[in-house]
Length: 136
Image (cartoon, rainbow, N blue to C red; front, side, top):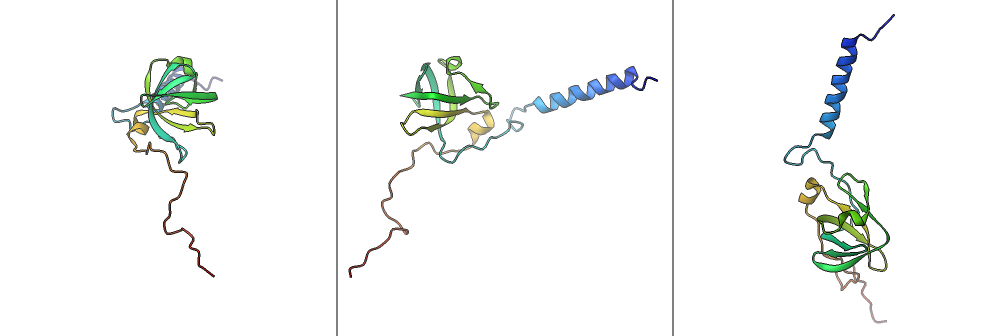
């Protein structure tokens, strides 16, 4: 007893293909791109890999850390050698030594979101939470 007729198989193939196309479709406004969640400390910049591990960030010379991870717009790992002389908009994190350690290449939807690219100060110069001392 054959329960799957050729018409049923053709219908299933069409449905599967349309579902795949719908999942991969990206409109011109970038609305179908997924927006990833980045760490709060991540900074924004334009990166160019000149000769790995040497890079430029916003036109200034910089360096990738040993073991640096670069993720493309689909969140897949990319080797720095594949990005030589390409200018890409990225979010990035630095390691303790100051080298760039985590890099996320942004898709158009993520690039449109505003993100500060200034470094946060490590020092507090006063404010409402500043403790006051009283003379005994």
